Length: 458
Ligand code: NAD
Ligand code: UGA
Image (cartoon, rainbow, N blue to C red):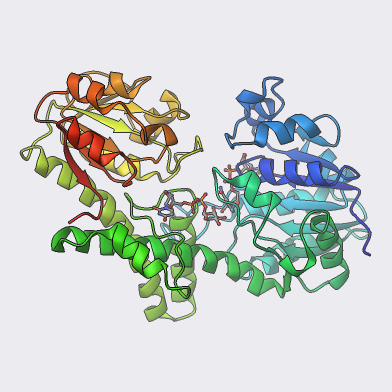
């Protein structure tokens, strides 16, 4: 079998780099894994003795980090030193949508990938396997190779693509039991080394090998297909509301067809998260670049429908509350883009809350993991009082006090079993529950006297 790398360095200690490397270190005690980042505060948080204060919240992550940190898992800001010592370097840096210049609003901003590749070119010693872990436009490996190839004599590199398919909130389970691991490359020996790492806990038939471009493109395609299912069911949810059908029943009926399958058919306030929108827009940009306008327009519609769904929910709340929410208190249940994460990137709650603030509402936000500071950044204004303001409160009961409506936006477990009698008693009547996730105990809410709107219920 192929030799194992002795030392792995991962550039980028984010939602992907941190959990991914923690699981590799946990499963491969013989490999020393160092995760580096330029963000000193983030590295300090990864090194915090109090494991409840890691910078990424993921169920089970604290235990994995607790087992390996200081043994064969290290977090450091000494980027060049860690690269120099490593025989395998993962690039796990951010690749957000460009905000200006060529391709602004669609193309991926590759400046962090380029910068980290340049640092690798400079600091690496001997032969180094460079692994693209970030989600990248197809053919990025060409640029990475060109940057590395311009290095000093005596250094050599193999470039692999190994995209990550974990979902936030279930990252540890996804990493420990992946559906598949994808490795793209043109150097069979390098592929063998990376496959040998995963073979510690992933069965061989789940380790797929492809060429570089297929691997890079499979990641964008997987996210596009997943997001497309959500936009499809959300579009049908709106149609259900208009026609008296119920999207839950429709989802169950179509999901029973084994060719369609039951997963990813939960209608909601639109998909959030740092990747779906970014990756589809990137795909759209690339399709246009290659002159495939119809293909670009097809995928672009998935994002358009998602944006529409978010504005639609804010609009229907205003409509049901007699056409105005100015000065009204509205309780927002959940701000994270999904349950079991502290991540708010592209959370549907942001767009919905912004629309309601614009209408003059007073938002009382409850979320078990998101900080007040983060919400302030996302809403573009600090917490406050009065028309068009928001506050973070500790409990649903506190948020409901004097409120005209509750909006369930994130499917946190605790929102599924609330004391609706107690909540309804402190609200201003007539009071509403807008369940954009379809997760609340609707019968109990109705029994407590609330009007209930549920996503996709006609
Ligand atoms: P993130 O923003 O949480 O983390 C990226 C980190 O890289 C940051 O801490 C940043 O400071 C660091 N960084 C940037 N440039 C650097 C440099 N030159 N040297 C050292 N550190 C540097 O991002 P993330 O959510 O972990 O995503 C990383 C990549 O993985 C993206 O391409 C994303 O599309 C992809 N991805 C993300 C997820 C997810 O669930 N978040 C899942 C699969 C794939
Ligand atoms: C997604 C993919 O699921 C991962 O495979 C991928 O690695 C990752 O993107 C990435 O590339 O970043 P993530 O965004 O963390 O993972 O979470 P998902 O579970 O996919 O949820 C995304 C959004 O869709 C959330 O807002 C979620 O609430 C929403 N969603 C999901 C629905 O509205 N309905 C569903 O049926 C499923």
